[in-house]
Amino acid sequence: MKTKNPHSNYDLQIDIGKKLFMEYDQEMLIRRFHLISDETWIYLDYFHTPYRISRKTGQIQEKLAENRWSECRCYDTVMTIYDLLCYPKTETAPGLSGSWCPVSKFAVMGGPDALGFSKKYAALFQDHLPELSKACAALGGILQKKLAGADITFLIPVTPYFPVLLQFWEGDEEFPPKLMLLWDENSMSFLHFETTYYLQGDLLERLIRQL
Image (tube, rainbow, N blue to C red; front, side, top):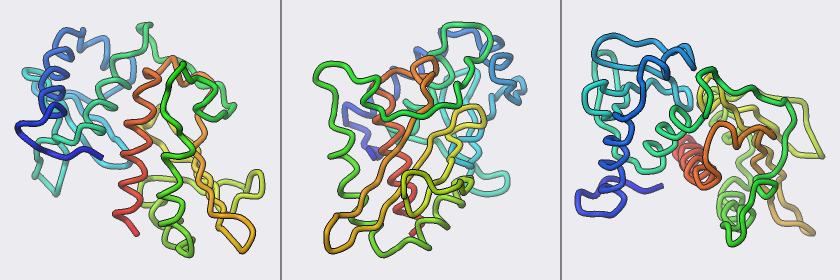
C-alpha cells in the first residue's frame, strides 16, 4: 500500500484524482449510492471505516476519532474510493450478480499476477487463523459457510454496496498456504480492472495491521 510522500508520483496522482472527482455531478453520485451528505461533505464507509469527501476540493478524509478527521493520502485507498464512486456508467447503482469469480476472468493482456501478489500475504497469515478471522470481522467481514475446502471464507464489504469474498487455506507438509479473493461477476460495472489491484493491496495491508 502506497503511503504519503509529498514528492512521489503517487501523491501527484492523488491530487489529479481530486480534480477529476470535482468534474462529476455530486448530486447524482449521492443519489446513485444513497450516500449521506451535507453542504460540505459526502460521507461513506470503506472497509468499515468512515470517510468523507470534500464537496469543494475533492479531498478524502478518514475519521480517526469522534470529531477528528485527517486527510487520507494512501494511494490505494483514495483511488479505489474515487473509482467505486465515479466509474459506473448509469445514474443508478449497478447490480451485483451474486456469483463469484477470480479476478483473472476480467484480466487483460499483461495484467498483474493476482496469485503471485497474494502469496506473501498467505505466508504471513499461516498459523494465524483465529487472528485472521478477527481481522476480517474488524473490517466488517461476515463469516460464510466454508467453500472449496477453505479454512475460512469471509464476505467483506468494501463499501456497503460492493463486497469481495476472501478465502484462506492453511498450508501443511504437502501444500503451501493459499489466499484467494473472489469478485462478483458484475465487478467491472463498479470499477476499472486496474483498481482491483489497488483494492486488493489495501485490503490485505489492513488485515496485516489487524493481526
